[in-house]
Length: 177
Image 1 (cartoon, one colour):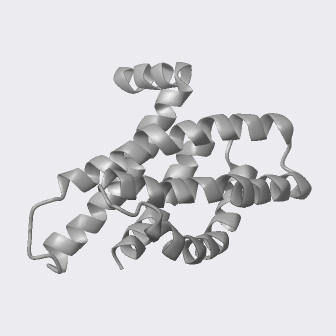
Image 2 (cartoon, helix red, strand yellow):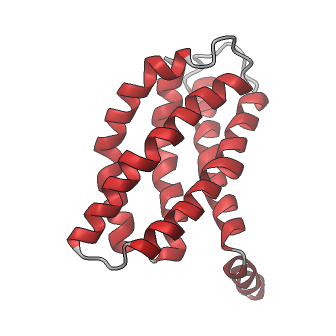
Image 3 (tube, rainbow, N blue to C red):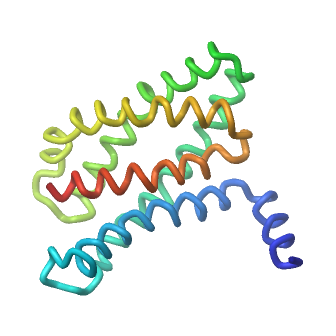
């Protein structure tokens, strides 16, 4: 119990690190679960070895990119729109979906293409951005409304990490299509 107490105190004093670690575990965990299903369970991939390079790319986004952006974004959003009224939750959810999500989604597709060494780094984004964003609206608007309604400010990114685990499983599957 003492170790848990020390860890809690450590991460309470370092919320960005807490968000990076927690969100990163969920994000990379989604890619790991996809590879496990494809390679070990369904055996759709003839190579049974994990794609470590792919896990590395997801680690970049899941540990260094998204949780840092979300940490500062939610800090700003929560300071500008205070409370849990329906009007505040609606504003936050719409701003999150229509202001923050488009550049982060584009950065995923373009960034992955860059990290994969593709020649045309915008091709996949052009093809998949629209369908992914529209599907994301159906998923993320209710998820974010729950986040803003139920979660304390300090837990927003971690709750997002849990929702992202589900979402990334979808986006990893869609990226492979």
